[in-house]
Length: 181
Image: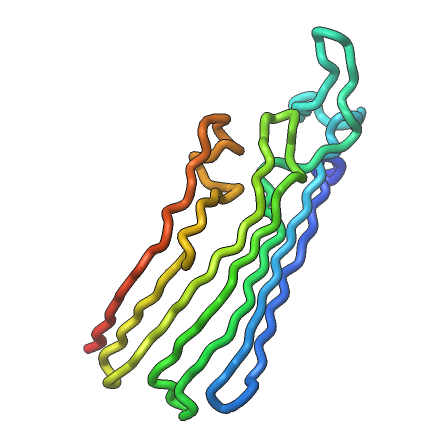
């Protein structure tokens, strides 16, 4: 409907690329970006049940801005890295090193109490080995360097509840196995 088109404007993009450098080395990268704008403040032809959080302030009569970012939009994020793998087509083993880079998020819905978050970069290592056709072993380390950070869209973060932020756990190790029969 026209009300919904006038109420918000969203857009974004995702990019992915990888390249085989040699028969055993591959590089890769991703980029994700989302933008959303709330345009409901001065839309006069919207239905009466479509309310804006940014209407006139009843205490002082001050009008809010014409537009504002939509709430809970993830920040710009990118991953880059390289993989070293078995040069045979079956690829029985692989090791991966990657960096996850997340930009600060300052494009926030202030009228709804959303709070910005700082950017961060974490480093990860992931591996797998398939010693037999039926057995797959995986292992990895996430957040090398034990970075203290919070995600913009964590459900118990300062950006949603207005309480002390939930920080992500430090360095994590994981191991896994899969047996097919």
